[in-house]
Length: 287
Image (cartoon, rainbow, N blue to C red; front, side, top):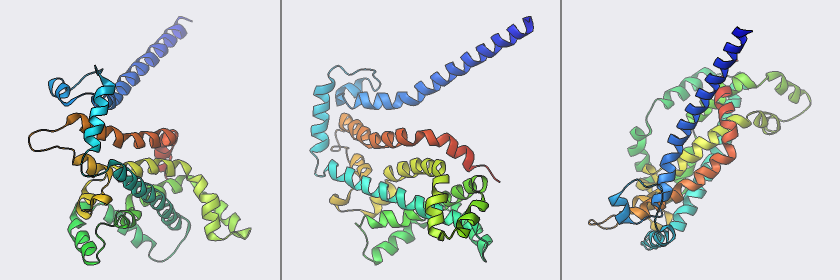
C-alpha cells in the first residue's frame, strides 16, 4: 500500500512538472507576439527608449498615428494584403492538390521510371532554391512575365518536399485494398482519389497547408526580385519598405505592419492546428 501511494505521489509530481514546463514554453512562445502587438500601439520614441514593454500608455492614440504613417506611404497596404492573400491561397490549394496526386500515383501504381522519379525528387530537395534563382529570373525576364503574380504561384505548385511528405504519409495510412475495391465498383481514378484518398489524407493536408501558407505569405526574396510595380507588391515587401528616410525609422508603424502580416497566419493556424500533431506523427510512419 505504501509503495502504491509513493508511486501515485511520484506520478502526480511528474505531471505537475510537465504542466509547469509546458506553461513556461507556452509563455516563451507567445511573448514575442505579445510584445510585437504592444509595440504596434506605442510611439517610435517610446520604443527607442524601452524596446520591451508589457503595456502601452496611450494605445489608441499611438495606434492611430502608426496607422497614419503606415498608410501614408506611396504604396497601399491594402493592395499588398490582397496580393499576398491571392498568392498564398492559390499556392496552398494548388500545391496541396497536385502534390497529393503525385504522391498517390507513386504509392498506388507500379510503372517504369518510378524509382528514377523518387530519386529525382530526393535530389531536388537537396538543391537550395537560391542556387537556381539567377536562371529562374533570366527565364522570367525573357518571356516577359515579370510583375505577374502568376510567376509566384505556378512554380510553387511543384513542391518536392510536400510530395515526399505526402508519400510517407500514404505509406502508413493508405490501404491499397480500398483502392482496388473502388476500381471494382467502377469508380474512375480521379473519383477514387478525390472521394476516397483525399479525405484519408486530411491530417497531412492540414499540416502542410499551415507550413505552405506561412512560407508563401512570408516570402520576401522572390517577390522582391520579380515585382517592381507597386500595385503588385506583397505585404512583406510593403513592411520591408517601412524604413522612413535615412534619418529616422518609424518603429511603431513597422511593428504595426508586422502585426498585420502575422494576423492571417494566426487565423490559419487556429483553424488547422488540431491536425498538426496527428499529421506530423502519421506522416513519418512507414508501412
